[in-house]
Length: 168
Image (cartoon, rainbow, N blue to C red; front, top):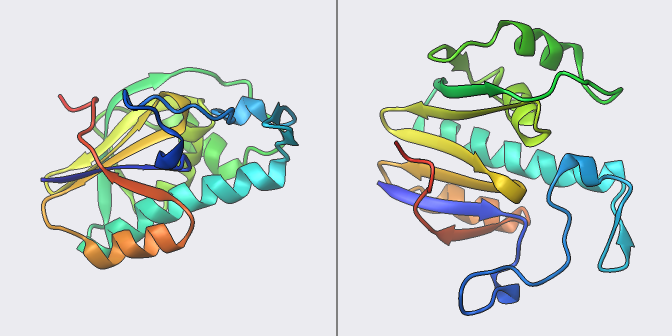
């Protein structure tokens, strides 16, 4: 399987142990905070969140995958804010481990995960999407998605060959 770590973190700012050294936001809850002298606005956060979601959806489309299954679901927080859509709240109420999620609902599921309302792995036989701490995302596919990976890079995210630490 071809596995990648896809993040907003530029690898140029990692030390020899792989630790990211720059002061960066790592969570939706950081909106309004200041990092490396720059305030994180909601708009700036939403731009990055959308890039992550576009990466997942574009890789699904590239491989012709119409749904992913929820694995290891953990409900973490139901203290929704004004930026939570009705669709996110609906999915939050009905989502179950083992359930298949259609590509149409993948963006809302990813938002729930990235905003730490839930945690889950999204998987099927030929693809997985795992989200880690500090806004890390790991994706694996059975076939190399060269063109899609290049589009993700051109969209502003960093793609590194890296095995998911969340594989079962």
